[in-house]
Image 1 (cartoon, one colour):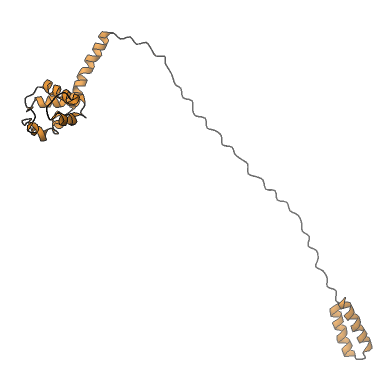
Image 2: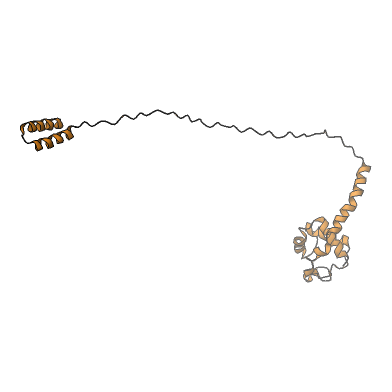
Length: 181
């Protein structure tokens, strides 16, 4: 509105004025001010649709274990006679004796040397019998008595703890070694 008013005023002044140069300058300024500004052309926007597919879900296939063939047989009745058992015992006996022989009685006697002497010639702590020359049976009787707490004098408690962890086969190997001293 101000522009229109100023344009009208300018025309009025131009019409009233006799000066040409002023008129031209005023008219030029009016033209400048009244120039219509063209709006920019509308920009056309096209809609573009982009389709995005969801990734396909891949279900893992279960792996089946390979079949295993197992053959189960019914147990058979076993009948054994005394003769058959005796044969098995005779077959196993030498093997069992070989196991006893494999236990080193001399190595086991290393634990005894401090009190009984290198060859069993000492009375242990001055209170026991000398074991040199004892038979294997006498040594085994003493061992079983020590384990049971029924054999020995003042030293039976010491001996019980010394042989407590020996197996029967180890005691036999040790008794065999002592009988050969």
